[in-house]
Amino acid sequence: MRWKPPFARSFAALIATMVAARLAVTALGAGPVIASQGAALSWPVLAAMTLLGWGALLLAERVGFAGEWAARGPLGRWVALAVLAGLTYGVLSVSGDVRVWAVQAGDPSVRAVFGTVDVHQRFPASIPFYWYGAAFLEILLRLIGLTLLTWLLRPVVGRRRPAIAFWAASAVVSLYEPSPFLANDLGAAPAAAWPSVVSDHLLGELFLANLLGGYLYRRSGLWTAVVFRYSFYLVWHVTYGGFRPDWLRLFLG
Image (cartoon, rainbow, N blue to C red; front, top):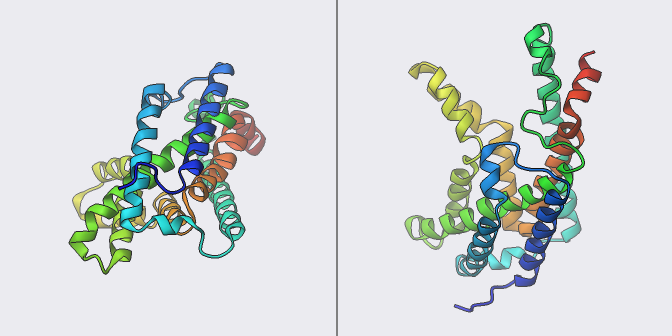
């Protein structure tokens, strides 16, 4: 196995943008919004992610993903699809959040928290903060997680069935983000309702969006998956979340 993977320069460029974004977050005086983000923003973790991602590129070549990095068809179409899908997902997320608050707005205790930001980083730090987060998650989930799990599953399903290994791995990896919500809903529901709860999450926007991210990674490369996630973040976290209290006052009066 070569020490230098294919598309090493592209990966190095992505890491360079993360370093620049991390420096910008510090310069703007921002920090993690939730506890788990503190570890993700640490320099040792970024260094470890870089090394693991480099190794995952080498493993991707063995799995057969290396050829997938060259987009099948014009790259511009894949990027346009990623942007359009990400923006659409962002709009759906914003509309869902506003609907929830509209239902609860009559409660004085709910209206009292309009001044909080919840899980969103304030603007303008949100711009570099969520670029870093988008790249971090796609390296973790797609490049490292999806590649490794596909490699592990290939001998199980047979090497002549790479698509089965990929989609099975993608389904498992795609559960990473919705799993806390799934566990919470399962804990609150009676056992008889568990199949319905699971099916709701498997058909939910968060799980399906992760499946799409995996598909984009396989078909047109990691950069396209990052663009998809950041396009979503651009609407949900930057444009809306960065000014969330103001938007809620505007929407709800």
